View 1 (tube, rainbow, N blue to C red):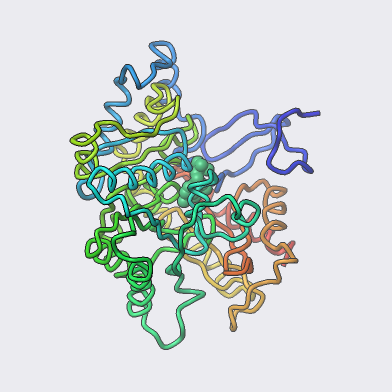
View 2 (tube, rainbow, N blue to C red):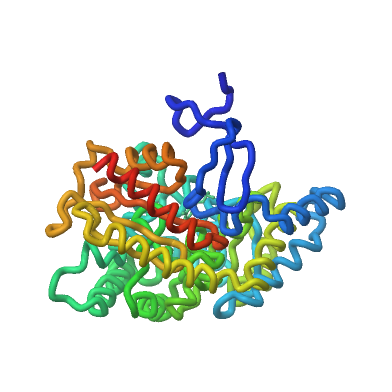
Length: 438
Ligand code: PMP
């Protein structure tokens, strides 16, 4: 019997014993095409360069508390990220995962406004059907009702506007552009409702991952969001924990939208699974306000800037940038989109196939014409996840896409090293899994 407390206490899990490129291997020798372990594994498994970087760093120095010392890999990684980062992002705060990054972003926004003499700014606005992490602050920002429900009495008050979810929420007859402007303008209305000088930040994912299934915003949406934030002095926090680090075809997903945030959160692909690491990047303006003020960001965790984690991420980001892997994600992503369209484009229960780069989503519907979702009681996504796993495919089906917990989608996020024949294998396995369920 396993004494590890698993996610689902009623299921027995296979034991991960090895990995090879795009495949995970269990202790019985069974191979699984890894197309979605929550979008972590961007370089695949057993990347020798990253493994060596980790080994060398453990041997040299495994840990030094950042209250006393910085480290070479942390400094080099920060420099490399800043070199490629959008806008005026200029400083990097390392953490151990995505929730820690979004949590730190919320607290940094608050401290920024305290340091600049605007203590009344305390509201965070985020979007419905979003996910920003599972710690209480991050969960408060998230707008996924199912994830919030149990903890609702303990959450911090934050408000939520509509997501930019063209497939499900754009009325017929409205242009994509007008729809995007209209839903972006909900931010302005919410700022005015709360009182412009009380709002400190707006948080959103450039491409919504877990909750909507790889949904990018329509053209012009984020430009309008940026304008509104600038007009009212609201900090724009972009959460690229899942969609960042090359997955959408650009190193940073917001590059596609042509906007730069004031604070950017990354994780998952940053360490590519070789070490747990996340980061929060902020603009010089924010950093300087704190440096010239109290000089101390009142936050922190024991493992921030961990030398081994930053050494792993330095090797990962070096691999990504030197080998043009975001470009490869863009090209292979087009192949994946077209293979999915060939296989499922006419499927009676596939409503939409979308995404950017190697971040793709398939929306499952009971009725294609009316876009009516499946009854949640059927648990379609969960059943497909099981069926795909039985086929030797790891992907990320989720329920609760639409408001009120209806809607199912499948999220696909394969490693950037995926080859054409593995895309065929992915689609064939997924096809069998879907056919087994609906
Ligand atoms: N933000 C987004 C957009 C995410 O997808 C996730 C994880 N799925 C998180 C934050 C939280 O990251 P972690 O699980 O590493 O805490």
